[in-house]
Image (cartoon, rainbow, N blue to C red):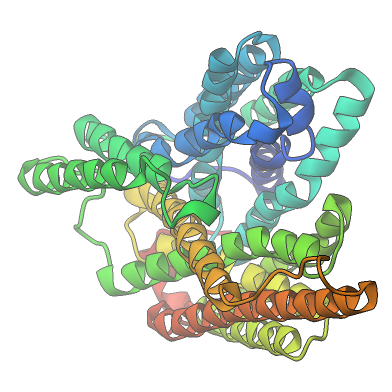
Length: 502
């Protein structure tokens, strides 16, 4: 696909409109957090059985993860414009299905369609940035796209609560229709039609389907709504085994097929693989933080859910700000420098958090802000590195691979680290005797109760300190891996990296 011919102003409008579409999809990934209890009340699901509503989350995750590689490849074949339009249309249809659902199954189906369309918008927009901007300027643009994606985590719960308070939770989905229409109109008028490459780009639909099934099975198997009961849910192991079997079939199909989902010709595999591994690590640490900070706030710090959300906001606000900084630095010094520094700073932040908790110092807000900003710095460099190390006609697939790696890291990280930390907590408190107010004076009971509660708090602090220490080790390992991604862009090689004038 030849690079669209667009002036600077038109390019900025096009990437801005695509970034706005990414923001809309990202907001919907988090929008149900604050209104889930209100929603399930209409479907006769008791509040003490929230696990029955987990398909609303897994359905979105399933669509978000599974369809990315194939849709990214379709954008390589047919152009970014038509795929973004199709995704926005599917997102609007999914919103209508969700808004009009009177039973849980249609609502889950609508959320899955929203996830499929909203998830594809991110890698296609990343590939669009590669189409429109030169390699030197691309990281800064990807920083803005990454900031839009991460901003959804900050705005999503607030947006959902605000709209639901005014017009009810169904209004959250209805409002997507004019937003999607405005984004589609902006894309239509700002982005010129790309000229297809001579000979076209063939699409491996069978490979895309097999990979989608494998990723979907992994998503379902790794998502555990009750991590206290085990690392995996009851259905987890057989589902993951089935996913692995389908993944083997995908590998065999790719080996024998003349058309592959990601054509290996022209791919710089060492830096590309390093970027994927680093993205997986970033996803693992990100999700563990999102889960464990909320748990920490409500158990160790005795905060309510609103207080936990405010505590987590210190981390979430740092992500989009860090993404902007990471893109700016990468555009001047190459992807390697901000990726390594970002992961190293994140490792330092998590070690700091672990030390604060181990020393019973609850003032963790600065550490969370540093961790969020540091992880945010890595977003644009990892995306840009994937685009630089793959041919131009594979940019959609490469962008999807980065996002899928991050999503799988999130699922693996929360399944492993959270369940491991709960197991360690149960081990450390197994020998504690719960004080009972029988046969002793009230003063002695209160004294024993205070000792017991102090021991529980110490065990909780140790548990969370170990989780943050593990997160720090993952970030440190990712910093070492990031040394293999590309360094500074040289002007004489820009034409070889798929960069046009920009």
